[in-house]
Amino acid sequence: MKKLTIFFALIIIFAFGTISVYGETTEAPTTTFLTQTSAISEPNDDKIYYYDDYQDLIDQVYQDVYDDIYEELYNEIINDINSQFYEDIYQSVTDKVNEMLQNTEFSVYVDDFQQQLYDVIEIADSSVLGVVSYLGTEAKGVGSGVVYRYDEQTEYYYLITNHHVVKEGNNFSVAFSDSSEYVADLIGYDTEVDIAILKFKAADKPNITISDLSTSNNLTKGIFVLSSGNPSGLNFFGSVTLGIIGGLERKIDDNEYIDYIQHDSAINPGNSGGPIYNLNGEVIGINVSKLADTSIEGMGFAIPIDLVKRVIERIENGTLTVNTIMPRLGALYYEVPNYYNNGQVSVKNLIINGARRTDAITLDLPSGIDYGLLVYDIITLQTLYNTPIKSGDLIYRINDVLIEDEAAYFEYIYNNFEAGDSVTIYYYELDDINLEYNPIPQNYEVTFS
Image (cartoon, rainbow, N blue to C red; front, side, top):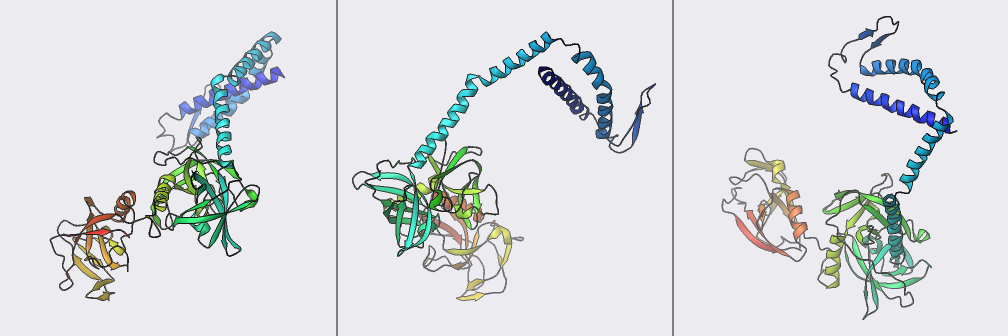
């Protein structure tokens, strides 16, 4: 058995040696050999090699060399090795393998990683609950949620879930692994970010763990994450899956203002509202399983925890008076770079003197302006409603930041402002009579709705 093992080891070593030679050969200039058929021969040798490129040559030479020397190697090397030599080689190989397997650093790393997983799972098992939404007595939605705070004075626990888990209900409960349910109150939600906050009391559940909310601004691809929740409902309560972050700042559907975390820890309907943890047992995101399409393998998405914390703050201090923290301009617009042509734009659907023009109107842009957002409609009761800014006006700056296109607009306002914040909008006003822009820019302070 030892002889057989060593023999195969020598064959493998020889094969690797051959591969190395092959690797060096392919690095030689190949211009000539890739375009014509050639032949080489050795004196007193009846082997002639025909090839179209290096691969053909290598394949033929390799096979002949292998056939010629295999038996010779076997006879001259294997048969000449005495039993003591076998024993020495065997012992040397065994020692090396044992040294590798018993390497302290290697063992500590594996043990530490496994222990980290156990520690995170222990937190999740006592912090991640089921969330049930009822319309009357009929269950309308089942998802997951994670406990992030406990108020000792009121004895309320606070839990994060998704808005879409609770949006069809009018009364709610949180569910535990023993199938018990406790009444929960919905204290606030954000329809755009898809976050809802519930509070509940459970005095006879002393082992509820508070999950720490980390930060999501220093995440990198490749970080290990664990998802915890109730895939496909409460029958699979407390399931955990391991994966890595596969991408950051992902845009999904029409939610251009949210930079989702992409990961491959398996999630399914029922995981909605459940957390993804890092290996320190901290929550770095909230899963949105409605975005994990069954036709897509290994692509789950989570709301970054920094954005979730912004929603929580507004809900808890009572300043989220609209449906979302996300600021809205309250206008429909064209991106000027997409329509720009030699100092002009040609656009439809402008409202001129109170009437919508469905024909294309060509406008000369102000000098030096080839960027911005050209407004063509104002949305009732939103930010720009009842302001001087109207259809045809061209927004080119917000505060001190030039707004070149929609991406620049999203980047600036969604990272720096929330509903209720005020900004100054700089714009060029379109004269409805002669359809020319006033060369003197205007500005107006608005409060985001």
